[in-house]
Length: 287
Image 1 (cartoon, rainbow, N blue to C red):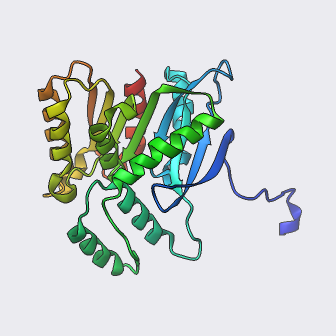
Image 2 (cartoon, rainbow, N blue to C red):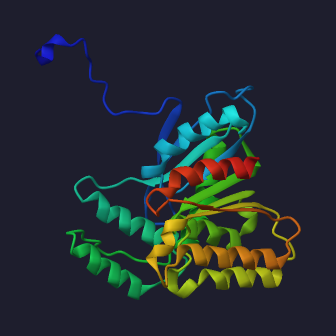
Image 3 (cartoon, one colour):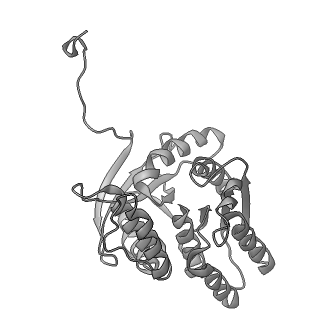
């Protein structure tokens, strides 16, 4: 059968029904971001304000987050607006290089030149050039979300300003917790999947301690998760142990308003744990 025998028309790139993509140039970060937004399929009153779920690593996570949230409406998840934060990449350069450069810069709370040098050398052996990668841009990235992205979304969509969620995986989980400890009022709900707590000699524990010294309460919902097989990375990474230490630390603070869920998924690795974490995390945060 020849190619002309099919009643087919090529429609171009695949899109998710009910979604829109925007290109947003940041003042705080020298970067143009790709912002993908998806409405719920069943929203009742179409004009009613929606809770917002912000998803990091949008280039790879948007396609999973949207159907997950929509399916979970059958299990009681309220209609939510999914907003993913990705990047407008230069198609003339390898995507893996740009992916490493951008998220390493934006998701890390402090400079770690030793780690950057080690990673660049390791990636070079796989023919991945990380260019002029940098670390320690989390403060600017959080300012972008607060001062630029949130107002942009609110100008286009009816949203609940007091019901916003931040989710992130790995370095994205590190940033999620950085936002929690740096400016906890930014979001009502936080979900950190396999957070890279090992970053820069576990510097995030210093951020947590600084918050504890000045805050009497932490009135948020927090979901923490990790795959049990991630402990196999060993020191200093020790993903399961580091997360357990954080859990115990937060419990010891006795914050009256903190509602925390902590899940260790059996048989999951760093590469496989995200889908389970996203599903369980949304249910826990909105349960």
